[in-house]
Length: 150
Image 1 (cartoon, one colour):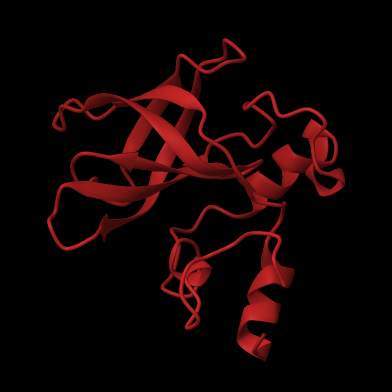
Image 2 (image 1 turned 45 degrees about the vertical axis):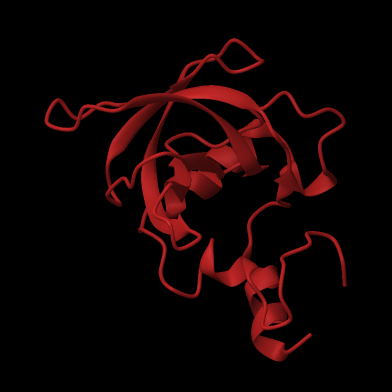
């Protein structure tokens, strides 16, 4: 592992988990008509990555509902990258407006902590992702991303 990858891991606020959790993503911007049933690819207490059928602009406010926990939450598009070269699917990173285990993951990783700590961490960070942040940081020069594998 090169030093850059290690520092990116240290910056992460909670463990990412690969999980296919069904949900519906709906744009809250009246100028952008979008609603789609999809699945998460990865989740943590600050957000998730989902595969959708069209690109979404960073900063777009969205609602996540039809979660297994029955909750409805709001989030913002953090980033969006094409999956493959066909333009058929897009990987969209969503940052939750209020962090927490909305996914119903049990037992949750130890660093997911209490919801009050997660809410404070989310409030402290509200900038859109940079190239060195998720999802860009998940793809190593070695090939496919494998969370938890050293």
